[in-house]
Each structure stands twice: as structure tokens, then as C-alpha cells.
Amino acid sequence: MTDTTTGPDRDAAAPEHVDVLVVGAGLSGIGAACRLRMESPWATFAVLEAREDLGGTWDLFRYPGIRSDSDMFTLGYPFRPWSQAETIADGPVILQYLRDTAADFGIDRHIRFRHRVVSADFDTAAGRWDVHVERTLADGTVEPVHLTCGWFSSCSGYYRYDRGHLPDFPGTGDFRGTLVHPQFWPEDLDVAGRRVVVIGSGATAITLVPALADRGARVTMLQRSPTYVATLPRVNPVTRRLRRLLPGRWEGPVLRWLHTLGTQGSYEFSRRRPEVARRILRRGVERELPPGYDVDTHFTPSYDPWDQRVCVVTDGDMFAHIRSGAVEVVTDHVETFTPEGIRLRSGRTLDADVVVTATGLELLFIGGVELAVDGEPVDVTQRMAYKGMMLEGVPNFSMAVGYTNASWTLKSDLTARYVCRLVNHLRTSGTTTCTPVADGVSVSDDSIMGLNAGYVVRAADRLPRQGDRFPWRVYQNYVRDRRAMRHDGLGRGLRFTGSAAGPAVGVRAEERPATVGVGG
Image (tube, rainbow, N blue to C red; front, side):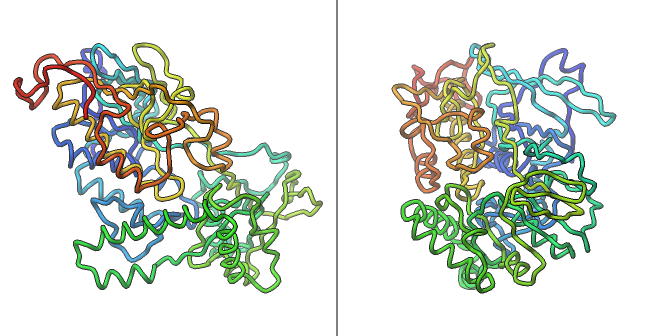
């Protein structure tokens, strides 16, 4: 892959300018760049990636068993439908899919690796962002890079890549075994025949536990409280049957909509009839576990389904290991680490050779970039999110924030297409700035993430706010968002201002509007 750089000499003379700057070369960033190639082919763009390779989450996480927790027909891109048999795919397979997509669309030639964006300041008079970047060279030294862009698209995800969340467990320094966080899994860690305690009950733990048992470990999953789980097949029999019946050109769209509506329907049903959803999920767990198993203690959460994300047990693999005795689930609190393992609040001790802290992520909004408008710092915690993708009062800026109740890509792709609509409108209208403006909208107290998960609650004071009504409220509903972002006019809540010097690129002077107002 080409690592195009902006050298010191060029930077000192004049910063390089691109029409759209995409930050992040993961699932969202690659998708956003592909959409620019397809829907805004006139636009120059670059993709900045702080790490040394593309893939984001799917390149960073290397722990055993890593896989998607959404179906691949919606996690994959609609313009490059998922073609493999598995509905739930392993991490390396997803990473290869991203590599292939970037290569097929020529995006890999636009990615600049080891480029970390530090700050971005929008110059209203010029109608562009001044972006300051740190580029890490092969020898580890860091040099500054200065770019400008017409549109700044943050696709850096929502969590820190350099560290995960780790509670302050007492006594960790006394533990003589191996302490591992899944975000930084050692390639040479051998767990065969060893006692492994996995602390956590979320998607990472649910994935790790059976994978470690497959590698010959004796595994204990230690959780403070249970999580809702549901068994799903790796290869969906309904999907497999439909593929035999559908014409090739219909296969991708039909399967995508089938899984989209199924997931959305399940979510809406759970929110409207939580007691019924509880019973359904409980019966599913009871069918998988031995008679007399303490389901109340270990698999019955105190909250309603989808207050936190429901975790997927692929092909019932974790339950199979519980039935065989290779995996034990313990619901208790850590009192302290000891040299031999963990002492629990109940007084029980768990001996361990390896402890895996699957204790969650640490959120980092827009990659920690410091935003400013005309030199005035932007406090994102005091700004409302417009359609979950722009910030109140911040011009020519977008952020990819996917769904928490469905596939991330469903929303990030809607965002990418909406950005294309906006930059195309700026070009054809001859305007230079597009700014979300919230007139008469009240601020709501609930999170834009739509979950009460620990990683969301811990970061509540670092996230944008949302309003009391659309388009300033996030509904976590793909069907509603698709209608609003693909078919609504561009004027509601947006203000288009400024005038390019001379005719806009590709637009004849007589085609430019006589007055500049809000686009429709």
C-alpha cells in the first residue's frame, strides 16, 4: 500500500489541500472513501490512519475467537455484498474483506498510515479546515504535517486504541500469573492445560471463553452480573436456503433487508414487551444448559433486554463447554488478587495461571481530536448531534457513529452517503459552509449511544448531547434514518452559507444561484 506523505519542505511552503479528509481506515473510513469514489467522483480525498495498517477494530483485536457480533449481511457494505456462507464471521475473515474492498475501489492508494490527527480548526472566511497531524516515521520520530480540507469526516470509531478499560482491582501487583487485556493479546500466549479466569460478561468474554476452552484451557468466566445472551447459528439455514432461490442480483439486497428488519423487529419488540422478551431469552438459555443449572444467578440480568446489548453465542459453543465441564460461570465480585489467583467477596478463591480482563472499552470521541471554529475551541459535550452524524454549530464536519442495537455499518453507510449529498450540494450551489443550527430545540438527558452499558455510562460526560426531537434526536432505527437521510431535503436544521470565489468547480456561472440560502 502506498504511504503518501506531506514532506517538511512542501508543508512549509503551503499545506496540501483535499476536498474531503477521512480520518480512520477501519470499517467506517473505508466505506466513506468508497462512497466518495462512487457518489462524489470529482472530490479529492485522503484517508489518515494513526496505526500502521487498515482494518481498525478487526486489525487491532487479535484475541482467540474474535468474530462479528452482528450478521455480516448488514455489517458488510451494501455496495459489496457479503458472499460467504457464514452469517457470523471470524475477525481475520472480516479483515480480509476490508482489505479486498479497499483494493477493489482503489482506496488503499489514498491511505496515509501512521498519521494521527491532533487538531482541526475551521476557518469560516476561507471555508476550510486547518488540520494538524503528527506523522510517525519508521525510526519512531514524529514530524508535524499540515493539511487543509473542505470537509472533515471523522471515522475513527468510538474507543481508544492505546488502552482498554481496566478497573482498579486491588492486589494485581501480587499476582504471579499472566494478566492480559483482550485489546493487547500476546501472540505467544499458550493456554493449553492452564487455569484461565476471564473477568467480564460482555461480547468479548462470551467470545473468548469458548475459544480458550477449545485451546485446552480450564476456563472460569467471572462476572459481577449476568448479560442477556442468545444462541445464533454461524451459518443461518434460512439464509442458505434463500441463496439457492434468489437470482444473483437480488441476493445481496434481499438478505441485507431480511437481517435488518429481523434485528430491528427483535429490538422494537424487546423494548415494547420487555417481560415477554425476558421469558423468551430465558427459555433459550434453559434449553442449552444442564437440568437444574442456576439460570437465575448466572443468566438472568436485573435490567431489561437491550438496556445493554444482547450478546451472541455462536452455535451455542459456550453452553456446550459449560455442559462438558470445561467452563464454569461464577457470579461474584473481585475482592482482591492474590499471588495464586483471585479472592472473591464471597470468600471463595479462584486459582489462576492466566487472568483475562475483558472489562470493556474506554470511549474516545472522534479520536480525541481537538476541534475549533475560527480559533474558538469546540466543547463537544455541550453540542447536540445532528442526525447522529454532525455537531451543532460546527461547519463541514461529520462523524461516523453506528448503531448500538444493530450493525454498525447500517448507520455509518447512511452517514457516508449523506456526506456525499452535502459536499455535492456545496459544489453545485457555490456555497462553502454547511452548519447544523438548532433553533428552539431542548436538550435531552439521555445518551446518543442508546445504551446503559458500562463503557457508555463511564463516558457520559465526554459525549455530545441530543435534543428532544428529530433531527437532533438519535432513534437507533435504520428504517427511519434511511428515509430521513436519503430522501429528505437538505435544509431542515442546516444552514448553507459563504460563496466560493468564482464559479464552483464544474458549475457554469449561469447555473450558480443568485442568492445563497438553505438548501432544499
